Length: 229
Image (cartoon, rainbow, N blue to C red; front, side, top):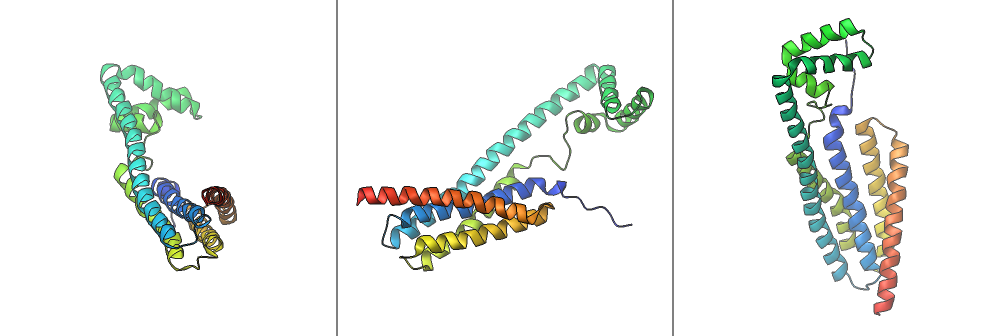
């Protein structure tokens, strides 16, 4: 029999990868558009793209590492507290576990039997999974998340950087926006496919908010450029 296909185990790395790639595309493109709207030469545009690419990748990696590490610390603290409670008041914890199973639809006698059996096998992991909602699939991995965010930001940000390098200066804003929409649509489709969700919905969502970000940045660059000139 073929095993049922699930997507939950992809949540951690998929979230970091999609966030990084889309942020790389949107933020780098927006930065380049803002500079291009205020400049008639290529040098500041390329420099801005490179600075945004490097700074963004490091910022994403560091931010993701700190965020996921904080989540991991909270889970470790909960597990340590649960371990102490299991050692000091096992009967109370057993009844608490049984109540969880009753709430899920089991009668009281069967719930207590299940709680006893699972506690005998591995009490801490049972409470971690059924009481705290902690399991191997959702367990935070700081280094994995940081690497995925930084690498995916670069994979997304390198695209508008290349456009900044080769596109005509006079039409830079339009080239950046056009390629960015294509890149975002591709990213949204891949993310939706990997996550088992609607591809059309994912593409429309990222393209809409990406457009908003780039238009606002272009206006800011145009207004700033007009004032300084």
